[in-house]
Length: 317
Image (tube, rainbow, N blue to C red; front, side):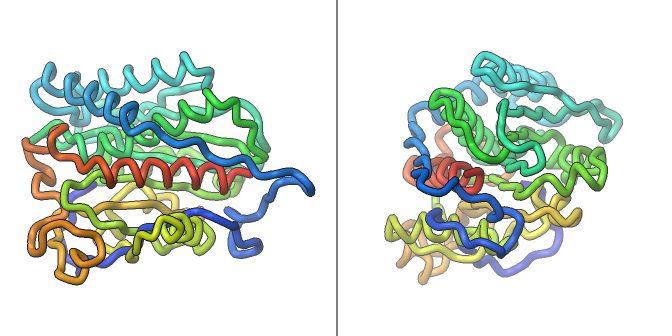
């Protein structure tokens, strides 16, 4: 997540997936055909998500300790994700841009089929800061989105809407990659995106369960999911405008997402809801060299990964 220069009070809302409301936004426009049972999302294996994190850690370790924009570590991270998607049958493309005098790259992966005029996107930033390997920020979101995409392929899922996944470059420099992508789309292409789901830091070691309160249909999808698990959520405010949903939102695309907290400190009320340590940051290693594979809460990562898959399935049917 991009560093915020001015502070805001941290609240949040993380949450779940169940019945889509119709008419609330473009994200809820399509439903399953009559008498056709809606497909259920598969369980996302935490072991598989963590295997991706281990690989990203190894890449960072071999490349100066980070996976930042313009670095060999970022290029190797992109190559790893792209190879997984290509092998699974996705149509991938790499979009090039320039930031801070260096070439950057976005990775876009489309799942064949579905209505091309109704596109559901899920994305995360793949770059780290220069000061560390960026495993929670944002290997966690990148790995969960990757594993969700691979689950689409393994299940042979054929949604009504078209599915697109994205991994953004240079988020840490000011949302450069995602903004470049949105700006590259004409108005007609932007209008085809019925929802963009963003996942930036979903495995914080002192986690909260926060849900974006932007598009009401997407928000309800997440809230209902977590409510079904008996997990309270809060509205996400720490990341407002700080991650890759912002360029989509500014372009009029319905957005939503999940977040487990960065450098804001957990309150006693939040600890009563979620456990963890009062008065400590949600992620004590935010933007630091200690943001390694040891800086992950497995339970939060597992729950949020499953919520991502559930939302992708629900919103694309």
